[in-house]
Image (cartoon, rainbow, N blue to C red):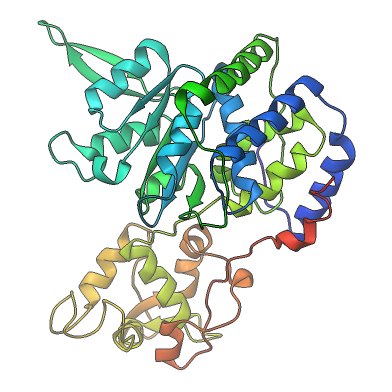
Length: 414
């Protein structure tokens, strides 16, 4: 596959062009698969209330991908979450249990059981109560999280010693996983997930009553239709580039986009509209990356070199920052020695000025790290940052660019 590159231009305009192109080409396609997806969406939304149609459509695509898991190199985690209990999360898992390939639904699982069952049969894991599971200390919730994180890509495994001779053995972790629980799961799971946030149903929102004995046969009939379609010699065709979609995000959505494109009709449009609606990128910033960002914010315009004292003075003035005097770095705040230690991993070193009287840092020394670890300056707009406010320089703040779904509402209808 060719390496994907970001393209210049307005992300909304690029997405609109892509959606129109896909719509023009996508009405052809696999009619059988399209009918299956249409019926899946109708079945899923009949028994659960979702905030918008993107949720049931994405779930329908995810269900189909579990039946063709051998065709994909990645499998998105489907995260069903809500702020409080009683919002329908377990109901969605009950519905999925009738539809997905080889389901295993559990509210509690050990790490050892999880990787062994995946190695044995590559089932679809439906894990309820993740909020309790990841708090577990008895069986290492971190180990379970690690398995779920690694298993979204084919080829990942865990290594354990087994048997009386303690022979090392690899256990595969690649398998479809759906998680349900209250609150947010760990950020590393959200980063690999199609996220469906449920809300408690209003009295005015009607759904059919779910009774397993009555409803499961209908779900099983749909599952059999998907399984029959999955017997075909089908290979996914992946999009080479999706405007405004980062590589990790495209890895997550590729299987669903490939299925939607194969189905044709409105499904290619539906799948692309769902990406900004059901994706949550969690920005996790380490202390050293924050330091890079705030040094860039306080750096005086046009200066190629500034002293260590100037940098520290600017950092100490950031009220909410950790660098201030009396903060986490002690009564003196961030010191020249600690500053140099934090920047050492980025190969940024202090140098003397031309007169050899002061030590400081060159602007060019930061350029590579700023390019690699920070959002480009041309993507920063709007309100200023705390660091630049403290230093008296113009503030900047990262603005998230989201697709306005109203721009595509007419394209997704019909």
